[in-house]
Image 1: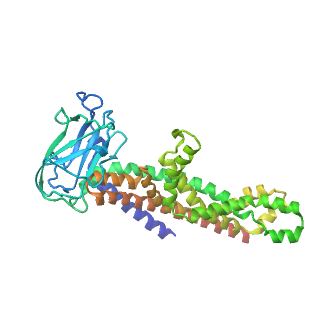
Image 2 (image 1 turned 30 degrees about the horizontal axis):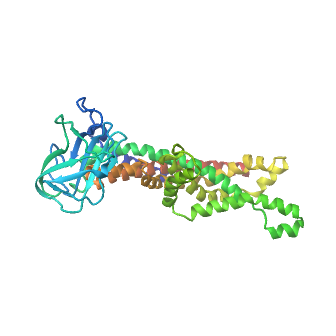
Image 3 (image 1 turned 120 degrees about the vertical axis):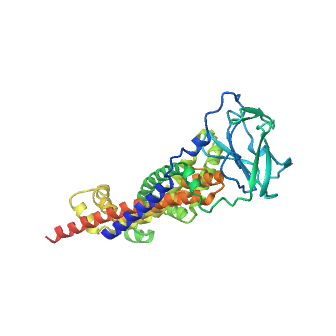
Length: 423
């Protein structure tokens, strides 16, 4: 066990060292770097262009040829991104999908425009972008660098060839976006801790409900021959039916489907009930609800097995000293069952760290979501996803190390209890 803990600590050190080396050069948060304070010359309601890709003032001289990004400060403008028009060398480009905004931070969106053909490789290119508001009216655009306002934002870029995202692993991209992605690790840990806490609560009640079935209806009738008793038995069986339905439903459907249904379905239910939109749960708490309910369903069976693993003599001893059924569960059975289920609970906690990535589909800005946004902005998805993978790996190793330490401590306590019992 000591060797196992040693390997875990070495792995943790290696993972953290890799992350630190990636961030050796001091950089600001991506949003901070790309978002200086808006110039006072820009009137309210006029979007401010803070930067573009391909960037004529940057160090990169190649361009993918099928995508541009415009980093904006909306400055109060009611922008309709899908209505944006792009021309390259005077020719309007037909986008493969409507232009959309990717939120690198709440106040710093980036307009993304992609197309399939034509693709541009080497040469001098002139870009013109026209923006519109939600009423279909063209917007004036303020260029922060030149300090000028125009109906169309224009810039030129000299490309030395088609870029394939630069090198496969671009350390400059990794350094630039490191702290932005790192902030997603905090959200990932928050999701994991809150979700596992609620999952344990669901699992506890679910396991007690599953254990509430003592005998079949036939056995009860053969023993008591009483309709009154059978009626009470039907009422007492309700927790069992609810727990069984709960575990069957959430273990029998995909977690991703549950996340989407809760995020998109709950607002529709609230609307059908006549409740205002303010009651709609935020994406974060929709993700917590789905993760908690899903993992609670699996942990229900773990908790049930742990409770059943407690020797029956413990119950008999508790009854002998006058403890009620609930007191027996709370003071005798559940504390012992908790020690039994801790290894399985630790494994599920570690698995949950990785499954939190699924909530990226409902716009929760955890590790994976931030890595995707950074990849779209930098045109190098592989590098940013590697940073996210390193964080997931480091978190897994860190919590696995402490799980191993806890299991070692519990094994020692168990060995001491056995020695005391022999004496």
